[in-house]
Length: 246
Ligand code: SAM
Image (cartoon, rainbow, N blue to C red; front, side):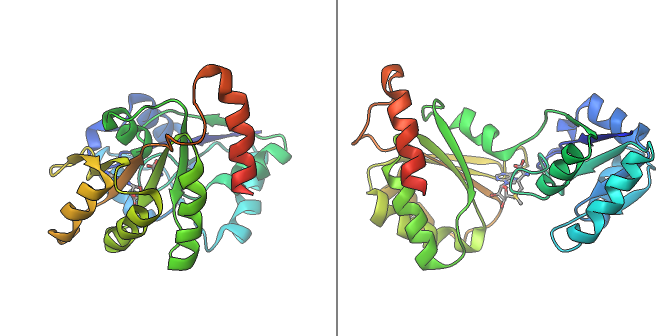
């Protein structure tokens, strides 16, 4: 059998591509890309010519068996998304499952990821942290999700689109309270990278004065109320996360 490589690509700055990622993209038989036109830009930059196949949310049902067949014929495939680490709020999870079911080896490469990049610069305790990704686009569901997150004594990380950020911050301040610490990491690794740190009240005040543009990742302090996050309580709080999220 061939191998499935999961290959992160930059989240802005093309210099964040790793040598190994370029080498794998060069040597595999196919690259399965979320958007082939988008990936072509990366290919042009690094002079890559490997054949591209599209693999995204809308064609995955038909595409997965085709990709698994190619792998079983001995072809190596690399999977990439538009930016960052595939599978993390991006397509790829079902392909990995299908490969594992069929005994095809899955080889992950480390690389660019907005969540971890934001977390390390946030100044907010990284341990434990919970990666949540995108909240629901519907206000009611988004508020319910924030109500669950509000209980957790762990730092949590959200992705949010620029046109929903103001609304989302308004909900967050109501549900989490204005004194929670939040870091807004905007346009990470890009020319206009900005990392704003402060309270939720301050973040809301800031967002009111801006027209919001660019990509945002939010790191939010966990609840200080209910549980301690010290080592002896980790087990209890973990059980509670599970209960609260159900
Ligand atoms: N797979 C990607 C990763 O590993 O980070 C995430 C893909 S998700 C579809 C895209 C979201 O990630 C954006 O809406 C934004 O919330 C966040 N994001 C991606 N690039 C970013 C950047 N350069 N700065 C801040 N946030 C970013």
